[in-house]
Structures are given as C-alpha cells and as structure tokens.
Length: 275
Image (cartoon, rainbow, N blue to C red):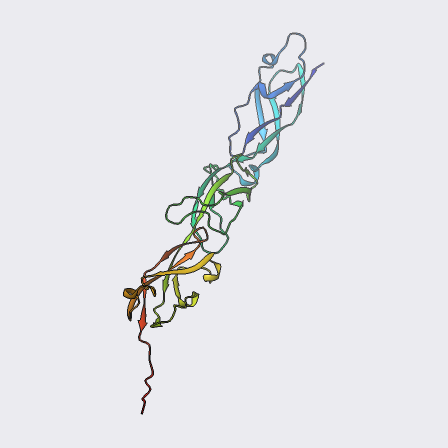
C-alpha cells in the first residue's frame, strides 16, 4: 500500500516586474515521510507550474496567481496529493522626478510637474501622477528667487496605474516668483502755479497678467519729482522729471518705476485796458 504524502506550494510574493525566483524544495510544505525517508528518497524533479507570466500583459499585473507544485518521480511507494500555493505580485514603488519648481506668477493656479521614474524597463508602462497643493500667488522675489512668503509644497497623491505605488517621500517644495511690472508716468501738462493732480490715470504699465490692473497692487500711490513749488529755481516753465512710487513690494509683481517727464506750461493772463 502506498504511503500518502501531502505536498503544498508555499505562498510567496514578488514585486511587479520581477522574474520568478529559482524555486526548490524550500518552496514546498511536505507532510512527514515514512520512517527515515526524505525528499531525496523520491529521487524526483520538483516542478512548479504558474499562471503568472511576465511576458503576457494579462498574466503579470498586481494580484494573486495560482502556483501548482509537482514532484516528478518514479518512486511508487508514495501516493502524492498536491495543493496549490499562491504567488502574490505586489506593487512596485516608483521614483518621482520633480520639474518646473520655479514659476513666474501669471494669475492662475499652478503646480510643478512630477514624472514617474523607476518603472519596469521592458514593460512600456505609462504612469501619471496626480498632485495636490496648487497655489496662485507669488511667494518669492522675481530677481532673486528668495522667499518673502511661506514655502509652497506639492504632494503626489495618486497614480493612474495600479501596478505601482507612491514612495514615502512624495512631496516637493516650489516657488512662484513675482511677475515683472514696469510702471511709467504718461506725459502730461501742469499750468504754472497749479498743483500736480496725480492719480492712477496718469500711469502706464507693462507686465500685468490675466487682465489685472492697478487695483490689485497694495500700498499708496505717490510720486517723486524735480519740480518744487517752494523753490524758485525749480518751478519755472519747462520739463521736469517725475516718477511714480508707493506701491507695495510683497505682492504678485516686482515693480520697476520708469523715469518720466511732465511739462510745466505758461499760465494765461488777461490784460484789462484802462481808458
């Protein structure tokens, strides 16, 4: 009478994209042999049959696959019954390559780019990363990239390919720099003896984005000029330098004020003839 021997494939796992390991008796759970017999007594060849096949798209995704064991032997002393084991294919951790970490304010919400790396080299997989943490306002000076606000942080939150998973380090800091803005004074005239009436209507600008205008700027508009009504040498008819100033420096624009001029013109006087 044959002795019953139960042989089960031991459950094990690989990472998505891995080749199957070289499996031997260590991947088998075998019930007790008769007497002093052991696996060598069977003088057989261990064979594992897998559904998993990394050459076929439909047989290599993350999941569980049946593994069927067999000992090919001519020994007739044993009746061998087999039990399938499980091969688990686990998700592969991607790398993240962050780009476009410095951006110039354009009035619209912004996030840097995150590209998936460390994919299985011969699978031609496509993996897109979803991000959170978009920001709109500037937090750094345009010319120096130095922060004047809090740091912005983008986070990778999900992937569109379930065979991969995010790494534990899945964030990156980024900055939005001020947009360059030049403000000039539109040439105008002031009649001798009058005060300068100065407002936003006197200004021209180059650099506003997204249909923005002067109303988004902080601070109080003012001006500096070489014209001085209290100085007899600086109040005669002629041209005078003038330049706007006063807007805040920590907003979404890095402002450059352009030197301009205005004209002080003669005042008309009436002459009355006395008869």
